[in-house]
Structures are given as C-alpha cells and as structure tokens.
Length: 151
Image (cartoon, rainbow, N blue to C red):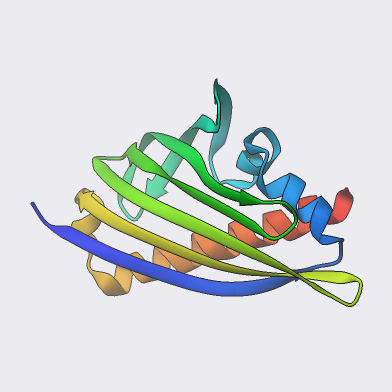
C-alpha cells in the first residue's frame, strides 16, 4: 500500500499570555472545535481523546475519527499530541507539536505536524495533498488565533 510522509511547520502569534494559549491547546474539549467539520469530542480518560469530524479531502468525503493522546505537556511551553486519523478511505498516523514562547505581551506558537498517510488520500499526489493541507492549516490556525483571542 502507498504511504506518503508529510511534514508541515509554521508559526503564528496570539495576543495572549502563554498560560492561556497552553490551556487552550491542551484541552481537546475546546481545541477540537477549531477543526473543520467538527462534530463531537470525547475524553477517554488519562491523556486520550476522540474527535468526530465530517471531512472533505479533494474528491473524498465522509465521517472521520481523530484519536489523540498527549505525549508531552510542559506547562506554558509545550504541547505534543500523537494519534491516528481514519476517514474518507484513508488513515494517517500523526504527531503534532506546539512550542510556546512569550514575546512581549504575546505568545509565538511554533508548530510542526508530521504524518504518514495511507489509502485514498495518499493517491492524490503531493501537489494536491499540499494544497488541501495548506487550506486546512490556514483554517485551523485562524480558528486557534480567533478562539484564544476571545479568552
């Protein structure tokens, strides 16, 4: 089966203290709501959670399940999540890291997303997959900035 490795990274600034940003990013009950197609989130105990989504990946549509587990939390500095996404005929194992740094009265968030995609989404090719990913990243980033700014 075809596997595609993806790595995306970037940064954004939030006009809030790192403590507020950390609490937002480490609470899936509020953070998951910025995912496009969000439907529901369940906390499974410990550091694990499940997010239900409606997704569109190019021509593929359907329900998706994102399972996540916090693998490293450093108060006001770092949030690292690993898990598996399944939906629209595809799967993806992923790791998402947010590193927080106070810059004056704001917080700079450096992030890295690493994943291994299998299934129909892997067949789309790098150009199409990167275009879809960029759109999703922009939407999620804007959602984080907007929601954290309200806190």
